[in-house]
Each structure stands twice: as structure tokens, then as C-alpha cells.
Amino acid sequence: MKLWAGRFQKETDTLVNDFNSSIGFDARLYRQDIRGSIAHATMLGKQGIIDPSEAEKIIQGLQAILADIEAGSVEFSMDNEDIHMNIEAMLTERVGDAGKRLHTARSRNDQVATDFRLFVKEEIPVVIGQLVALEQVLVRKAKANVSTVMPGYTHMQRAQPTTFGHFMMAYANMIRRDITRLEDCMERMDECPLGAGALATSTYPVDRFATAEALGFQRPMDNSMDAVSDRDYAIELLSDLSILMMHLSRFSEEIILWCSWEFQFVELDDAYSTGSSIMPQKKNPDVAELVRGKTGRVYGSLISLLTVMKGLPLAYNKDMQEDKEPVFDAFDTVEICVPVFTAMLDTLTVKPRNMARAASGGFINATDCADYLTRKGMPFREAYMVVGRLVHMCIKVGESLDTLTLKDFRSVCALFDEDVYEALQLKACVNGRKVYGGPAEDSVKQQIARIEAFLAQRTPASASEAAAE
Ligand code: ARG
Image 1 (cartoon, helix red, strand yellow):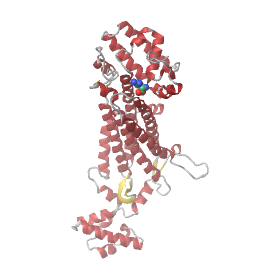
Image 2 (cartoon, helix red, strand yellow; image 1 turned 90 degrees about the vertical axis):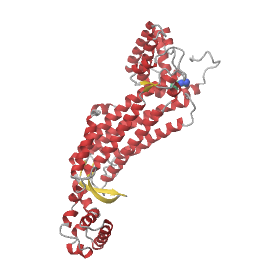
Image 3 (cartoon, protein in one colour; image 1 turned 120 degrees about the vertical axis):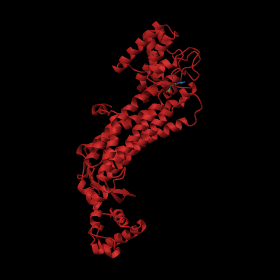
Image 4 (cartoon, helix red, strand yellow; image 1 turned 30 degrees about the vertical axis):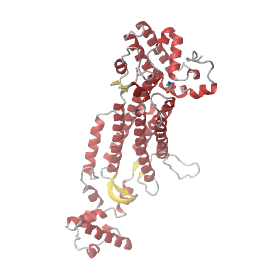
């Protein structure tokens, strides 16, 4: 029999029963639901809204249910629609009438809003911990490669020389922003909806500050209608995870290119690559490709929830039950992608000689050649034109700038001297760029120090924790 049988003359259609039911996915919120109910019951007892001895019975009953769920001895029922009604029904079965008092001054609307916030608040630090571990690998790779010269690209054309360390720190900065975005989300969502009731609180003297505090929130949400209808935090979270996945996807694309036979800048560890069922020579970057591919799922979750919410008037609407699966799926996806990506990056081998070879072709030091003339007094625009002519000449005769003779240089511009060869050396080109944020060894070391200072205030997910997720 349904809870609402008093009002109804007919049983729910079985199809509707299944359609309406969310227990298939929201069972995942059982811990948060029980925690929320314990806080609520405690408050009801303290406020004298229910008898303190009944509150005690409820709390003990809920604790026993929690233990049984964790032991795997509980089966949820579709007839009880969702996790909230399943647990309430179980409680009443176990402790009798006291169980029927738990829902005093509460609605599933503030209940689910609270459970879901608790869930998101617990899960964000897991992702942050994994990102901190990724940052540590980036720092390690950067430190080992502050002088590993490689080409930097614009339009996928060789542009100016940089180092693998500088490259790694670019990604480290993106991931740092991802971490702080998630921290911001945590900070803003740290308010408790409980006590908002269905939408208009209650005639009982519920103490929303007490439940907020008991559940570890900074404060109760300010407005009860907003409290039950707000899913901004889930949308913010999904935006943050989408941006993070966009970063991992770009990085994956980079790695896929770098380990292609054409580039051979890095080699993936055998344990983080796969073979082909037909082509014996193949070693494929499946991990990076899957991370790139799974980015689409996370974007999908964001768009789903934005679309679910866009037409909803205040306050609760059942559409909002569609908020959970996208968030669960996004967390699951990110929490598998980040550690596997981190391990792949950690174990890849850098090929400095191939990087240096690529950097020495493609006239990557052309800007440096122009800068050389500028230092001798020529305006940059003129120097740029001179070097353009030199590059054209090189291409015609199959030379590069550093293999031209001084006579060749002088045939285009009299300002060239012996010291041009020194200025064109890739190491000099990189280390001359000592500007804040630049690729010179010292600049990159400072970037590393700044990321390390940021990381010092945060703890990484341990490898075992990441694997257990
Ligand atoms: N299962 C519901 C959800 O996830 C719980 C809230 C139901 N509230 C209601 N008024 N039907 O949104």
C-alpha cells in the first residue's frame, strides 16, 4: 500500500510505479539519507517536537539500517519509490510508531536536496585529491625536463622553441584552476536546505541552524523556496568537471600526437597502451583516446541538467529527480579518468633527442634571428622582413638558418656577425626567454615553485585510495 493511499481510490499503475521510481539509482544516497535523518530526528527531540526517547529509538533504528545496508543484507523495493521512502518504511517496520514520527516537519523535497548536497560535498574532495596527485606528477616531469628543448606550436606549425618542462607546467596551471574552481563550488554550496520542508518550512519550531551544523554545513540556506529548488551547485560542479575533462582531453590529444610515429616525442609504457588484434606492430594510446572520448559524457551530463532545470518554476518539480544520474555518471567518469591518466603520464618516457631534432627544423629560431638584428639597432619590422628573406633563401637551397654561411647572412643584411650562430642555438633561444612565465630554465623553476607552494596546502589522494574508488 502506498503512503498516499488515503487520498487515492486506485493502485498506482505498474508502469507508472516503475517509471516514477528512482530507487534504482538514488539508493546510492543511503549514507547521506541516514545521516540527514539522524540530524533531523536529533533536532526534533531537542526541540521537543517529538519525545526525546522516540528520537533515540529512531536514531538507533537508522544506525542499524545503515549497518545492514553496508553488510549487504538489505534489499530495496521499487514500491517504495526512492531511497527516502525505502529507509523510512524500513525504520517503521523495525521501531514501530516512533518511525512514523521521523518525517514530522520534513518533506522529501528538503530531504533529497540535503542528501544530494552532502553527496556532492563528499565527492568533490575525492576529485581534488586526485588532481593534486596529477599535479605532483606534472611537477616531477617538469623538474626532470627543464632543459629538454622541444618545438612549441601555433596552428600546429613549429613556432618557437620551448621545453617539455614548460609544457608540463602549462598543464599544471590548468589543473590548478580546476582545483580552485572545485574549491569555489564547495564554498558556495556549503549551506543546508534541511528544514525548508516542502517549500515553506513548518509550523513546528525546527532549528535549522542545529541541523546545518550537525551535518557540517556552514549555515542553513537563506530562503526555503530556493533551498528545495536550487540545483546550481550540481550545474556548477558539472561545469567544473567539464572544464577539467576538456583539459584532460586536450592533453590526451597532445599525447596521442606525441607518441605517433611521425612525432615520437614520448613513448607510453606497455602497461598503459594496447595492441591491435590484426596489426602486429601497433602500440595504441587507448587510455588517452578514452579520456578524450569520455569527455563527451561529462559535457552531456552538464547539458542534461541545464536543460532539465531551464523551464522549472518554483519550487520542487519531479523533473528534478533527473539531477542525480548525470552527477553520478560525471563523478564516476572523472574519478576513473584522472587516476588512469595520471599513471599513464607518470610512466611515459620522454625522448629528448627526437624533440631536439624536431626543434632544430622548421626555422623555430627565426624570431630569435630577428631579435638578434633588433639588438643591433634595427627596428623589429625591418628585422622581421630580413629574416623572412633568409628563410626563403634557406628553403630554396635546403639549408636552415644555423647552417648558412656568414657570407649568406651578410648578402641579405650587413649587421650579421659571427655571434649570430650563438644567438641561433636552441638552448640560447630558450634560456634567453627569462621573462616571468617563460620557458627559460629559471623561469620554469619559478613556475614549479609556485605550483609546489599551492600543493603544499593540499593533500593528494593516495594511490590506494584512487584505486579503491
Ligand atoms: N525521488 C525524489 C527526487 O529525487 C525525491 C523528492 C520527491 N518529492 C516529491 N515531492 N515527489 O527528486
